[in-house]
Length: 173
Image (cartoon, rainbow, N blue to C red):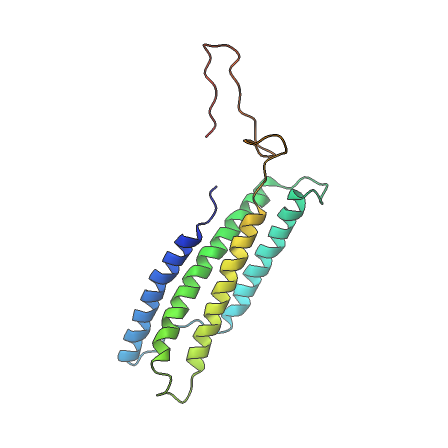
């Protein structure tokens, strides 16, 4: 699997931010409720971040040789997928709520209650935390190459070398 590209996360965040800004603009124009997640959503985000970190630390301990028992490869793959999903979800949440925050800033002086603005900012911070944890745990799941072997990593099968001139080498790319 390829590592998550932070530039792609930025593009997703900006695109969703524009959508969030437009949604906030339209809901304000038509006197509808602004589409912001409630602050209680931070509890769910916190659980996801904590679970991702716990599983990531478990993979990191095995990778660094501090854990003697064999790690379940399916659990390691799920941890990687969870970390990537956490990063992408965080980019969406950060972008959406920053778009709403930008829209609410123009109304800052006109409103007596700025709780919606602070709520959008708090949820954007939660999205940023999800991105950071997702990218860090994704790095935890990388298996470094073994000493002396530049092209292979632990747990991967070595490429088969041809025995004779007429036999083709297996290319596992």
